[in-house]
Image 1 (cartoon, helix red, strand yellow):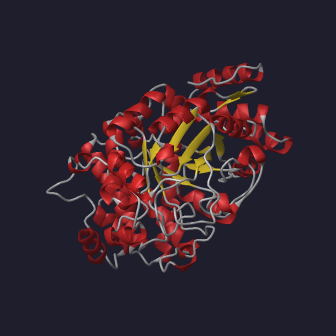
Image 2: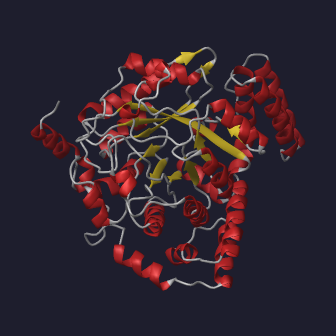
Image 3: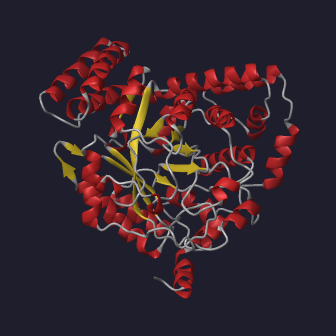
Length: 488
């Protein structure tokens, strides 16, 4: 175990104040608490015509301004909310089609120097069983995930000296080099401590996918109270983590807020302000994804049940909808934190990515165990991957494991440009069909195969041209004959 002095020295060595200050304007960050309060207050009781004008703007795939998002958040007309739910689904299909991207979380270490009062990993939690995977154990976990059909991971690390950039880079190399039968991991995203530009350049060169850092709460005072010690205690270092990533050439980044820590309307506004600042500084390129986890119970962590800002299911659906309308072209992630029935209700309003068959214990996939004392929180949806994929197919949503865009350079400004034009699905739907076919052949149950093959035929017929249909049909035949990883 490291001493407090050793941890303090490590934090001091990691945080580079000049890499915060370079982004400030007049010494201030882009989250103006007073402005957010005033904007929410000034847009109370919006009339129907204004809400419908804002919905129309979103349907044209234009990002909303803070005043418009505030008006949506303040809407109390249930009829208008139904219109917003419908618009969210239309926007998602307009940009991303009927695809749902699937991934799995892989927790590599739960050592952490932080004292986040809501987290099972916090350093003071003596009930947590601490563990960091060796590379041999990482390989075993990845093989277990591949054997279920996964192609995409989000790899999660506690914020600790043991999980420095070199360990993360080594982990990524191990993940990418691990094969199991015909399967492999083709995209590895990372959720880890904020890093310097220099460290992020190392991850860029290794082949990191999206780099995720969630602010958790954008409210300055609440942030200070809930993060009293550790590297996470520095609000500015965390807030500008993704600015540094973009400057380092990691051009896909993911933002998020943890609903349940503070006023959820404030947090939605914070997510929008974060998006606006990234777009302003990086040529219109904002976050690749936005996440909106809710506070969930965690072992020996009473705050998770006591917070006065806990968000109920009905409100949660509305918040997700407002995020969809506010940033219509950005990917949105709904995780297995949520119960199955919540996911069924919320996915249709605009979600683009989900995880399934998830186990967030350290080393839990290869051992097929569930140990809440090794977990950051407790999952709500513990169904297997095949069951969730089959349910998606029965509802007309095709599972995608596609990673072609990343390997063909369709990231950053390229991706954002086609997303804003509503053309993502033109490229990605054919590739979704191809990766879905791989899953059906290699991993699916007979029941899922029956549902899935019918859906593939339906999606083939929906492709926009005969030439494209013929191309995809030929590629499907090649997959049936044993080829893998084909893409357009």
